[in-house]
Amino acid sequence: MTDHRNPSLRNLVDYEDASLVDRDIQGRTYRSSPESRPERVAVLAFGNATYEGSVNQQLAEAVHAAIVYFGKVPVFAQSEVCNILDQYGIEHKLLREVGPMWGEYGDTEEMLGRLNVLADGASGDTMMVAHPAQMERVMYLADHAGLERTPFVNRMIGWNRREEEQQLWVTSPALWVPREIGIRLYDLARL
Image (tube, one colour):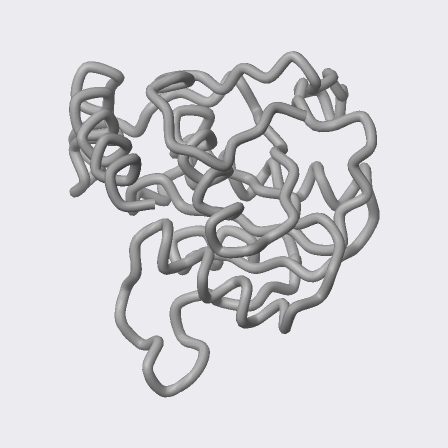
C-alpha cells in the first residue's frame, strides 16, 4: 500500500492508489485494499449537508456497503453522518460527543485522535470512509494519530449543492483545491 505518512499535494480532488481493487457492492463500485479485513469503520463527514444525494448521504451508503461486504463491525462517525446511518439501522458511536471535553466540533485531525482513544488502542485496520478529495489527508492524519488504516472509496461521489451547504469549499473542486493545498502545506510544516 502507498505510504501516506507524510503530507503531500497528490490526490487533491480524487484518490488514486494503485494497490486498491474495485469491489462491486449493491450496484456501486468501491475501491479498497485486497487484504481488507476491517476491525472498525470510521466515516469522516464532508461539509454539513444531509439532503438526499448529498456527499454525507453517499458516505453513509458507503458505510452500509462496507458492512454488507465485510460484515458487521463497530462504526464511528461524525455527527453529520449519524442521522443518515440511523436511517440504515447502522449502530454507530458519535465521534463528537464522547467524554466531557469532546462536546465541541473538531476538525479531521481531532476526529481521528478521538477515534484512536475510542478504539482504545485496539489493533487491526480501521476502514476509512471519506470523500475522495479528503482521503489523502485522512490517511496521513490517521497515521499521525497512530491508527492502522485502509481506505474505502466511492470514486463517483460528487460535491454538495452550493445552496444547501454552509461550508462552501465542499461544493466544487475550484473552491476545495486552494483550501486543501493550504491545509496540506501547513500539515507538511508541522507534522
